[in-house]
Image (tube, rainbow, N blue to C red; front, top):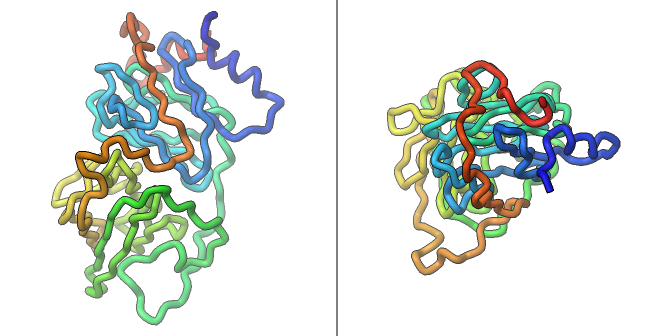
Length: 302
């Protein structure tokens, strides 16, 4: 039985009110995967067998990209992969799925989003009055009506110490139970830094296997750590993150997993890890799109 194309898959969903789904296809249009997406979650994509979605192809980096949602809009951030990610405008570092026609190529596959929700709009929430203004704020220090974040099933030690040029007080933040942390200037972020050099959504801190990493989320000034610019940086003890005049230092005390714990169940993300196996055997590059052009055989475009 032939796999469905993107158009055939969408035709079965027209009259159903469902959550958005990630569609992953070959360049030929054959659908490989449809994955429901839950708000507030994050998926890792790459060749590593511990990625949420595993793509075992040499054109895919071990840690290629992360997919996450913020205020109803889903983002795919490149992690400094060899092939990068590409949409109809060409190579990008962060792609936003704004419509169901929005696509992005990641190595040998093309990603789409069905039924993307309307992004949330409106002004930033007001900050809560505090006796002393800290070097950065957290979500609880804003007048927000968001549902409380769901704690990760398995703690992963991460302690951040931060201070700013205008406030030399050091603030400690224990993030061991967080599934992910969005960093930005907007009061809708998880870790809010009120600095004009910081983008409203600047970076995302996430779990990568048994360690923490940080990725640029399409910021204007870039992600800087230890004096250099990065798309992805592993957070090791002493890693110094620079957000304008605010500095965050990772002071992770110890690794959660030892060599004997590699079979420990992965942190709960709401997704079953998916391995494409041999899906790309005999796949050729003849359908590769030119930079800035649409894939000639993208799903549903036959």
